[in-house]
Image 1 (spheres, rainbow, N blue to C red):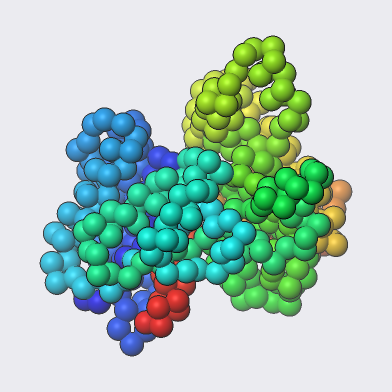
Image 2: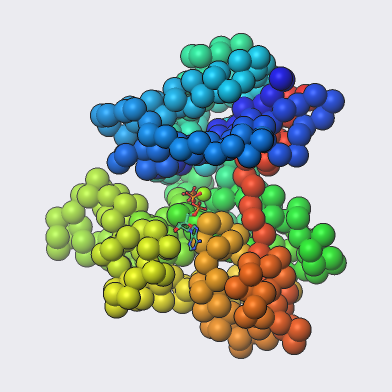
Length: 394
Ligand SMILES: Nc1ncnc2c1ncn2[C@@H]1O[C@H](COP(=O)(O)OP(=O)(O)O)[C@@H](O)[C@H]1O
Ligand SMILES: CC(=O)OP(=O)(O)O
Ligand SMILES: [Mg+2]
């Protein structure tokens, strides 16, 4: 089988998919899965084209980086076992930060890799793992061409004003501006919308990508005009372990009054806050929704409140609101979160149908809703496979 290998490495997870490519790219993977729990006790879940599901532990120990490497080796071993005749013709990767220059997917070589290394401080939870996956493939199959697909690229269509911080010009000139992330997910979802809501897809649309990392994007004519994430993937919504929007004065206070340095603040902002920090229980929305603890309820309430606040802000950037779209693990599966956001957004003429919402139907707006409300399962891996084939002319 000739195939494109797709790798989407996150902070604690590694998603992988294999897309057969003959005359054209297959619409669904022949083999896919994910390693979860990297950093703790990583487990791999595998789905084959025949629907077979396998779950096994990844044999590993040591640092987060070593666990990522072991997880990758485990994936490669499984690929060999299930597809001994495999001919990998290309590898496509999700790369979270592409900086100012990368507004489209690009072929990865040593000099591009060095440039992308320099963005690691801007995406410490993702960039080093993304690039480690590229280097692992390079070591294992040096002749296979690799393509980087950037989370930031989709947002390069934003007007300058949406990308600007009110900082002195010399700092902005160094590239300190809003980039936005989750672009592969927004790109995929935006392409699905015309089939679901027709001409409204070209109007003012807000997509909420609610996963472990969470952000929202305002679109006009199917293009990004604003996003809640900025220079890094810290800004905007409450996330699994990240703060989202935070008065920068809090950082000054913590530095001056509590003696916290950059390392301590990085840990606090990226790993100890968000749903985990507020609940003191878990970063996982499933656990919080199942809990009766007051702290869990407060964490979910804050998560939904911030989404509703940002929805108003993004509607202002888009010049209205024709459709609200939910995607990502929470957006696709957590009906109570969608219901709470809809309740808070009722003032915009947005109203959902409780049964459709409970069923996770593609359209969940009530018949009297002025705004279309949609649930779209995202597929970053398929987007990466398509871009990889397109970039290499496969
Ligand atoms: N059935 C469900 N109900 C509520 N939340 C869910 C459900 N399934 C997954 N989630 C939540 O989705 C989040 C992970 O989303 P996902 O998009 O898979 O994350 P990642 O950013 O790692 O790709 C977790 O908070 C998880 O609890
Ligand atoms: C950019 C980002 O936050 O990604 P993820 O949701 O995969 O953590
Ligand atoms: Mg994700």
